[in-house]
Structures are given as C-alpha cells and as structure tokens.
Image (cartoon, rainbow over all chains, first blue to last red; front, side):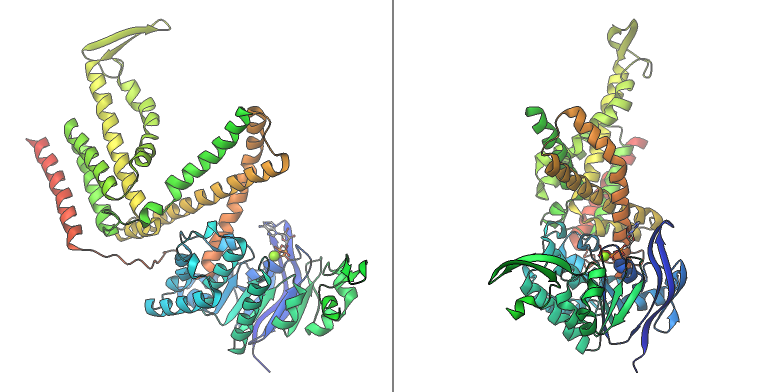
Amino acid sequence: MAKTLFELKGVYFSYLGKFPALCGVDLSIPEGSRVSFIGANGCGKSTLLQMLDGLLFPDKGIIKAFGAELKENNFNNEKFAREFRQSVGLVFQNSDVQLFCPTVKEDIVFGPLQLGLDKQEIKKRLERLVDILEIKDLLDRAPHQLSIGEKRKVAIASTLIIEPKVLILDEPTAGLDPLTSRHIIDLLIQENIAGKTIITATHDLHIVEEISDQVFVFSREKRIVRNGVPSDILKDTELLEAHNLVHIHSHRHKDGVHIHAHTHLEHHAQE
Amino acid sequence: MSKRRFIRSSILAVCSFIRESVLSDAYAAKKGLLQARDARFKLLIIFTLLLAVLFSKNIIFILSIYGLCLLFALASSINIAFFLKRTWIFMPLFSLFIALPALFDIFSPGQPLVSFRIFGLSLIITRQGLMSAIFFFVRVLTSVSLCVLLALTTRHYVLLKALRIFRVPQVFVMTLGMCYRYIYLFIEVVQNTYLAIRSRVEFVSSLKHGQGIVAGNIASLWQRSYVLQNQVYSAMLSRGYMAEPKTMDEFHMSIKDWIFLAMAILILVLVYGKNII
Ligand SMILES: Nc1ncnc2c1ncn2[C@@H]1O[C@H](COP(=O)(O)OP(=O)(O)OP(=O)(O)O)[C@@H](O)[C@H]1O
Ligand SMILES: [Mg+2]
C-alpha cells in the first residue's frame, strides 16, 4: 500500500467568505498515483488544485500533505516553503497568470532560480525541456505575444523544470492541437513511470483513462460524488450526463446526421 | 467616422504607448553603451549625476549634462525621437504647477520684464521669475531624462535587484515590482476589454457614449486586474518565489564601469567645489 500524499477531510472553502467553491470535500491521494478530477464548470476543480498546491487553505476541515497538516503559517518558515514548492508544482488553468516575466526564457527558469538551484543544472534542464516541447524559437519572445497553445507549453515547461515529485495540472490539454496534446500526455505518463504523482483536472474525457488510475467526479454542489477507476466512471453515462460531462449531440456518420448522447469517447473508433 | 476612428485609435495608442515606454524591455535587451554597464554601477552613476544636477547653480552645466544624456541615449541605440517624447511628456505637468507660477512677481519679486492684465488682475513677469522658471524647467528635464535613461536600459528585474543591494528597503522594492506588474496587467485588461466591446458592438458610436462605457467599466477593470494580480502572485509563490526575485543575469562589472563612475564623481566634486568658491 503506497503512502498517502494528500488527505482532505471535510474541507470547505469560499472566496471572500461569500462565494462557495468547495463544500465538504473528502479524499485521499496516494503517492505515485495518477488522479484526475472531472466535473461541470465552476464545481471547484481549480480551487481544489490550488489548495493542494498550498496556495489556498480550508475555511473548515483539514488538509494533510506528506503526512502533516498543511497550514498557512507553515509557509512562513522558509525551509518548509522551499521544500514544499520544490516538491509540488502546479500548471495553472490560465497560462497568462503563470507567465509574468519579460521573456519566455526568463519565465521558464524563474522557478528553479527562486529555489536556488545550480545555474549549470538549470541550463541543462532548460535545454532538455525546450527540445521535448519544441519551444526553442519562442525563448526570446515575450510570453504575452504567444498563442494560447504556445503559452500553455511554456507554462508547462516552467513547472516541469522544477522537477517536482507531485505534478498538478489544471486543464493541461485545453487549447492544444491533437499532436501537441499527445506529446504532453506522453510526457506526463513518462513522468509518472519515473515515480511522480500526477494530478489533473480536465474536461477532456479522452485523456482521462490514460492519465489516471483514479477519477474523482465533482458535483455542482461542489463536493465529490463518485470516485473510481476510469473505465467504470466513463461507462456510467447517467452519472456523466448528470454532471455536464456528456451532451446530446448531433453529428455526421456515414449514414447521415443523427442525434444521440455523446461521450466524446468512442463513437469514432466504432465507425 | 473620423470621430469613431479617433476614439479607437486613441485608446489603442495610449495602451501601446504605455506598453512601449513603461513596460517594454526592448531597449534593455539591445546592445549598447549603457546596457553593457553593470546595473549597480549604472545606478550609482545616474544617482551621482542627479546629485550634480541638483546642486548645480549653473544653467550651462545642467544643459551640458542634458546633452550628455542625449549622447548616452544615442550610444545605447535608443531612438532619439522616442526618448524625447518619453521625457518631454512629463514636462507640461511640472511646468504648469511649478514653473509657471514662478514666472510672476507674486512668487518671484524683482525686475519687471512684461506686464499684462487678465480678469482685472495685473500680472508682471519678472526677470528673476523667468530665470528661476527656466532653471527649474531645465533641471527637471535633465533629471527626468537621466531616470528614463536608467529605466530604459536596465531590465526591471535587475534594477530592482540593484536597488536591494543598496539597501533600499525590501517593502519599497517589492511594492515597485508589484506596481510594475500591476500596470502591465491593467493595460492588458484594458486592451482586451476594449476589443471585447468592439467585437460586440463593432464601434463606439460617439465620444460621449465611449466615455460612458469606459467610466462604467473602470471600476470593474480595476477589480479584474486586481484579481488577476492576486492570481499572478499565487503563481509566483507556487514556483518558489520568496519575496526576493532572483535572476539569471548576474552583475558583471568591468574596468569601464569604474571609469564611468569615477567621471560621474568627478563631475559632482567639480560642481560642489564651484559652489563653495
Ligand atoms: N476569485 C474568485 N472570486 C470569487 N469566486 C470565485 C473565484 N474563483 C472562483 N470562484 C468561484 O468558485 C467556484 C469554483 O471555481 P473553480 O474555478 O474552482 O471551478 P472549476 O471547477 O475550476 O471550473 P472550470 O471547469 O470552469 O475551470 C465557482 O463557483 C466560482 O464562481
Ligand atoms: Mg478551473
């Protein structure tokens, strides 16, 4: 049985005390696992991920990370803060937020520099990631001038370069072309094989099976209503329909246009 | 149509001007005389020259520092027209509030040069007043130019770091850094909002209507950029930011930096000596 990495018990959170975002979340995430969160817009996925990254803290309930309770005060201790930031990395849903340096290159090396990594080592990691993500041409450009997909790649690079043990990604493939999505997923799978814990929030049911051993489904009441292995969850059309994850859809098959519930999953493979 | 276009182009022009002049690191990335200087030395050199300008009572001297400033700008491959625009834009503000009143005998009694009457008030411009107004103007112009030169040729991260080395308090430096990013986000939000309005209504029908939209949105604009700013701060924390930015650019001093600094100090000493005599 693997060690528990994160554990949440009865967690409540609201923005500014009046916009509820998490209403009683219980879950645990084992070390080295692949976990994903799915659910309708605004059900609290991003909020939860930021909480796992030690950026938001529960109003009620507790969150434990690496076996100890995670509290805001802990981060006043520089040693703790550094270790935690080194161990856990988050790719934000909105890449614009994550990229704030004048050039792409500076943005990518921002994390490791703050964490005091060796300059030579940083250069080595930078070169490797630039190759994998094919962003060499972007290095000297200003992040705000890039396309959404390019920004996302840079954002992913800026988190991966820290080489955290736990990689949290908020919608990593949104806005990416199919081939780039593929690259990113392969990259994540490799990182997981290398022992990293991968936590993802996504609307893209295509990738759920590949990037997770366990899926948590959020309800609109902002708590977790189901969790299980991807194949079970993805088969449960009723559940998915109830949480905006599938839709009634009209589209063209060989025999013309027709309408049916559509999971964005297997229908094309069946043709 | 022309009015419409005027509104559109003026909003976008203001945004891009701010972006270009306050936020751009384009000039800092170029190769040139000042860009090659070690940021710590550059800060010291500019500071010394500022002191010299402040202490000097000789207008020719201040003008020559201004000339030097322009030369530096040229040698740092800064477009002179841009540099002038960038510095002169501050001048009307200062002139209006400080230099203009100084012209008149109410504030600067002395030998009358011109006199005229407005609204039954008789005003006299005095020779002393004129001199002190010109003096003031030149002094401010030169100081502003020096600061702009420093800001243009140094990446803001490096500049903040250099400030920290001279023990400028952390809070101050951090606030500066935050302001910088805040302006940046604010501009971004303004531009995007403007585009969004345009995409929905295609054009802002009149100047008044345009002002209405802007006024109605300004509160929510500030709010939106504030939320964004908070998120950016989270993103920085998430990547291990601990109140003191670290950069890849280490300071590189060279013998030239020392020479420049020595020259600046010499100028200051000369000014000071002359004042005493
Ligand atoms: N900065 C904020 N201020 C106030 N309320 C917020 C803020 N951010 C999020 N919320 C609210 O918190 C709830 C959860 O938001 P969250 O961003 O976590 O949803 P999400 O599941 O990530 O949605 P999406 O799929 O659209 O990304 C939403 O109801 C939202 O309105
Ligand atoms: Mg989200």
